[in-house]
Length: 426
Image (cartoon, rainbow, N blue to C red):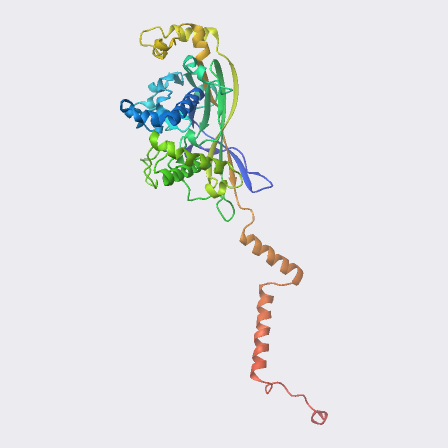
């Protein structure tokens, strides 16, 4: 991910009592992380849609007019739940629109990723956007939450808004086990720091150096779990709920996964729930999915502060969206009595995310073996030399003594020197 030609060691080795070494590395510029916001409201809509399809699917299949719906895939249902890409209202970096940056000409600065939790934006997927520390390299993202459409359907959730994750460009948001919940009507300032960890493979460590890439991007524990789930569903049902993002472009993929249609998912849902139940069980999860830790991993730590969206900013956004083809007009659904026609509507629905690096230094933690077999042999030799006076030469002399003793014993006693009598001495 990083160009080592731009790196310079800033500090000496910081030795820990355990088997890890830390250092700091500085860079001229950082590739900005991939940012994966997931709309929590859309996730609830997907859950409702899937529940309805579960209970009414057999009735829908009776009617020929709804034949097309019954043959939709699970993945199609999630895509229908949204969100659409245009709910990312704005992307600015280095005071320029992201799509106008020279490095992004004819490139995608954002793609949509379909996950089992819903669709999410994958911003800076190829790591082409780079930044410096502080405001000089900050990136601003503006999202629209569309609360009037989904707010009434969120009664079973204590929160609404977006679940945002910052990760390496080689990984996908669907493999991450955590994220930050962010609410609309808020401006968030995110200060990122980068930590790279390198672990030792056996016999000194526990990571598997052969695990490099997966159908979910670079190997990590989350990607391993998702592949484990896909293999299980494919063996039981012949299909999966959502296809992995690299299903067709990675040569190491064992199966050509396809998404279950809704009729298949009715029977496959039982297998999915069985897998989830057993994997969640802390006493049996290793039997279902045995996932090694990654030997190399890049992590982003975030310090987040926030404030409400100002009335002035809401007025500015509202005034810029007064044309017939504006996004606010596109989000309106007159037949459902949904419209956004005031600055207050903008203030309630907009979420602003300002991302920057707090420093141009990268923390590197390397796991090393501090006690090897060679160390053990050296310690044994030292103890023997100290307490027994033994060395290589004395050991050779000992074997030489044994050899001559055995040789004299085997050859008889004729060659032994005779004792002289007292008469002979005289």
